[in-house]
Length: 138
Image (tube, rainbow, N blue to C red):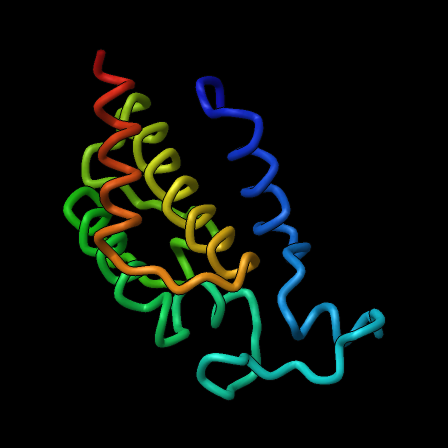
């Protein structure tokens, strides 16, 4: 999409093509220092969907994102969000960029915190997203 930063485009491309290095993927590729495919936070298989939407640490933030997106879309599920499959109530071309922008920034923030092995909370992610929106409005 025109108007989406390169870092977000790159993250979304890797996410959509299942190239994010979640533990399941790195274990399957037999990378060194990867002994299993279990999430270190909640002890379940660490897939892309788990890391971004189902993990006990990611779920509150993903649910917040989903609640915001559901105001503009029909029958939105976690799977549809992770595929950027938005069925807009009002199919106007100017609605697509804000939905993808909000999704990409939120998911990228979740992924970066997870990769850095940092604890994170909804208020941290919301504050960062709201600060970026404020700058864009200026």
